[in-house]
Length: 409
Image (tube, rainbow, N blue to C red; front, side, top):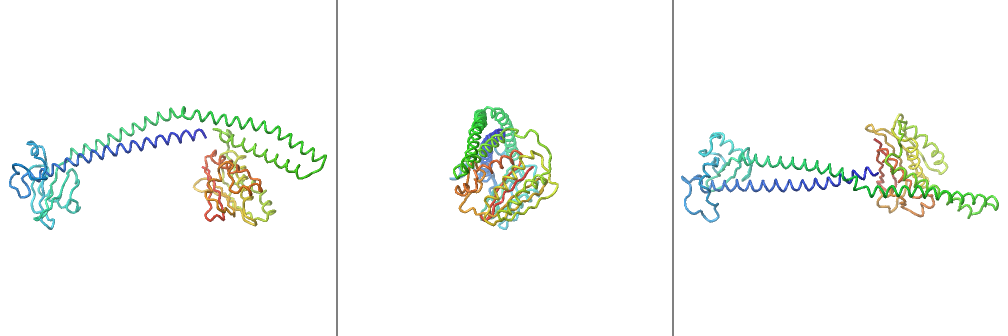
């Protein structure tokens, strides 16, 4: 239990840190992408207004028009590599301008222009170029700006941020694992005190319970049976079972409650445990059926597994409707041992059947008092399953039937 709690604490801390790192990575890279892309778009607009293209024989001189980009630096035409594709209204390239780039031929420029215009987008990235499409009454002008360095920088920043994030996660994971032992230490002490209290209290309670039960038997022998003596005997027996159940739960909370596990026949263990319930079902006029697959094995504690089966069958027997049915099934699926116990029932207004595994939870207090239930049996069943590395679930699709399913492995 403490081991599971520790790992839940570690996973929760790592999930929170991972979320923070993911947000930081996204913000940094998106911000860099936005800034870098904005600068390239600004360069493309400068090329359009001051580069001597789009029908202008030379770059525009003098003061720019309102809303036009700022005048580029004098060295811009020597440091900026670009080419332009001119298209008609039918989006067919008819001319190219490649004076400022040497790595692209006119034929390649035309192919680039056709590929970009087929996307029906006004701006974006194509291979190692940033492009923009400008539309006018004469057709379309596509400007390609070489952005190989900018794209490489964005990729490098992304890889660096991933490496930093991974390294940070590794360091934080190591620190969280180290300090988690100290974080759960107070809780571990409380659990240990609780176990000690339950163990000590059970021993202290058993002595007066034995005395009360013995006294009641002596009184019954001397003065005869009556309803008061019978009630004393019944309640002392019930309280004794409750103490044993609490001790069992306390034991199951330990790190290794079953130090000597073994391989055994799960099919035989279930069949032997279920055999007495066949006669009990007949006596209560209920239909009991079972389908137990042969040679299903399990690694664990045979006694606790038998107790698990007994708890589930006893629960089904007590809470099934009058003249109802109970079905037990054992099978192997995907190399896992499975156990199912289902029965006809009436859940009434019970909204969340998952509460059935809560300690001392009883959906109907009046009925539980009649059946002798204490609301702790299914808690023990869940603890037994979890100690064996399995999972127990409960489903009730129509509130007229209920099915407990256990999967080991």
